[in-house]
Image (cartoon, rainbow, N blue to C red):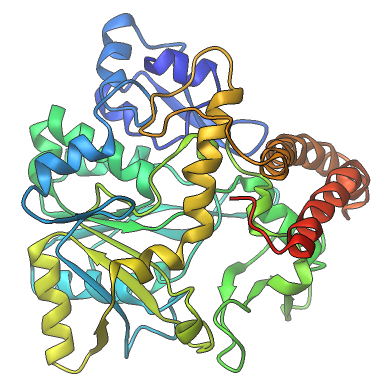
Amino acid sequence: MDIEQVVNHDYCIGCGVCRAADPAIEIGLNKYGEYVANLNNSNIDGRRLASKICPFAENLNETEITDEIFSGQMQQEFIGRFSGLFAGYSLDDRELGSSGGIITYIIRQLLVSKKIDYAILARPRIADNIRGLEFSFDVVSSEVDVNSGATSFYYPVTYSEALEFIAKNPGRYAITGVPCFHKAIRLLKRQNPIYHERIQFQLGLVCGQLKSALYFEYLLRRAGVPTGKVESACFRRKDSKNRADEYFFEAIVQDNDSKKDIFRISNKQIGVNWGMGLFKPKACDYCDDVFAETADIAVMDGWLPHYVNDGRGTSLIVVRDKRLLDVLTGGREAGNLHLEDISAEEIVRSQQGGLNHRRKGLAYRLSLSTGKIPAKRVQPSSSFPLLFKFEQIIRLALRKTSRHAMVLQTKSGSGLLIFNVIMALQFFVYRIVQKLKRIFKTSTY
């Protein structure tokens, strides 16, 4: 599978790394609010080069890449290579972060210690769209600016502009991103010595799935935000009095009298199971990397019983680069980080839902697929219980239908009536499946 087949079969994740190989490739949002590559102006040579760094084209897989980069380290089937496993948080950055503020702490320390000159991280910015707001990768060089990217943004982003900046501006960079984005960066660094030299640190975020821009609009409508401009939004507003998995989506709107109105809705009130996969790009259903295996470090929420009860948030950490291991242990010795060792089994258990979907679920989805499909480390299989198979089929339908339903909704004014009517039957069936799982007290996996 080359990049043209990736795009034509809707496996493009919109990372934008292909533009570093061929600037004639354009990256833009499609009607579903997903970044995709446009190859119309690219020639055969450009596409050939771009195919070598596309994360869903026929390339080295994550295991082959990490065997080369992190050889000699410990290895676990799902986590990949690692030199240290921790649970903890930053005493200064925990409040702003989605979990323990570890990524924010690391970036700040790298800037302060002059180990990097710039960091690439996702931040909000003013946009020329109906809401006047979007979230995108930005370049920061001051430790003060790091806080603006301290939380999670469930919104499509692309490296396209950031990689252009790196090419034009010599220096040392740290770059944040989800697993498939980091794989693309590793492949780019193999092909282009400029990026290999300048991108010094890859900071990974464990990812369950990306979301389209339609998800942001869906949340705004669920929170009762009126049609029009939004001043700011937070997808993970913590409540330290509740559990870590009980948080709020929050939007701030300025009215005609310059008064700021705050709209909030909790994730429990939204009532949409994350596993449903609403507004998810198709590529996410064909990814087998949960722990950002090609990144120098992977950070995730502490979804374990002894951490989830602390609403202030705890991060779980898989570190691979010795320089970052030194940053963490130095922070612990200085009293800036609370860190405790954790086992590989606990790390895996914290992300079991995502692993189930991306390993056993992927095996079944691969068995259903016809035509071109990405090469994965998981082998196709249909040897699963009937309830499991039905759940996977419903999830595929939910992903696809939610995109079309929300497009129709956005063309028909405010509210979610049209969306809810279209999705009602599939929501009902999905809930029945979940209820059957509880009744029989068995996992579909």
